[in-house]
Image (cartoon, rainbow over all chains, first blue to last red; front, side, top):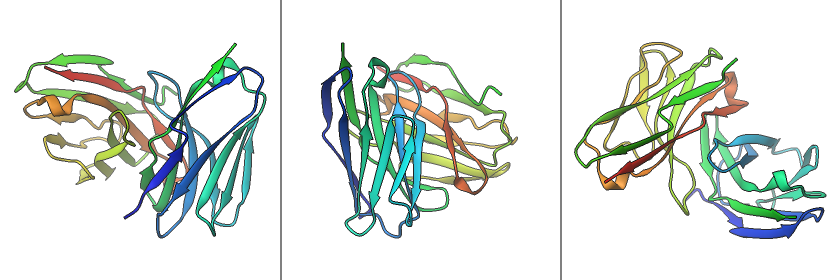
Length: 111
Length: 112
């Protein structure tokens, strides 16, 4: 069964600290992997997208990594800010217009 | 560009009532979809459309209907609301080739 699992479920860090969120998937076939940021009360917004051949992709302070062999991805947030408080969702695409969503990691950044 | 818009933002229904959630996009995307988001679960696909006049079922279609008469609009109809349909509903449109998915702001629905 196609599944995307994320850990931890929730995380609290102090402003300025780094953190890493994990995503493990059992989706096949694999087309690409995406990370979304979802602010409270808003729809998800795309942060990064990686294909099979890419093992790292950055978007400002967000860096995503992908290990297609172990079927794992991580999202690293550098020098966190209060505005980083949100849910982060990992999504694996087995084919065009098909999306398998993880349950998300809820991040809280404290001043 | 307004992107993807949804109305209403919040709605309370009684069991058995019907209603339509509106969704519109101004990016001329052919592919549009409806998801529901429940606590502790990933977004689940309800219905989708690959173009005007073409719709199909997703993972959890029961109790919902859709139509696509224009490229811009993709309304979701609840035929007879049930408490199990209490959720947050997101509409999304996707650029050609599936490169980028754009989500609306969501509609929070409470069924009593």
